[in-house]
Image (cartoon, rainbow, N blue to C red; front, side, top):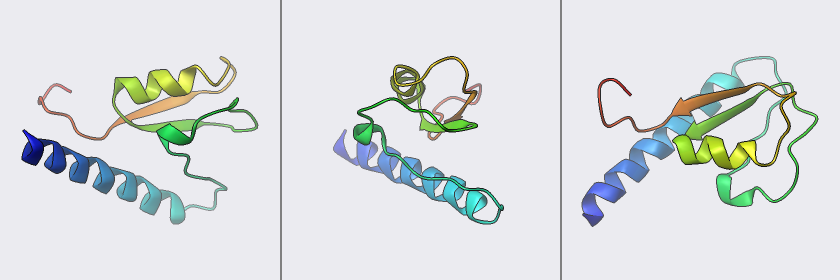
Length: 82
């Protein structure tokens, strides 16, 4: 079980790094905020990209209003249809 969790964590971290790498090559201002760092309202952003699963997207949604679009990236799909 622990080995499986460690593998999933590695896949998740690689997905975060992939997304950050793509953003670094664009002429955009962006910042990474980890899920456990969310503590106040998310505002002054044109787009929020969540990298994780449903829980990550839901947690971020509690800190923002409906004026900011959200793009969810599943960092570790376990089923082909995910």
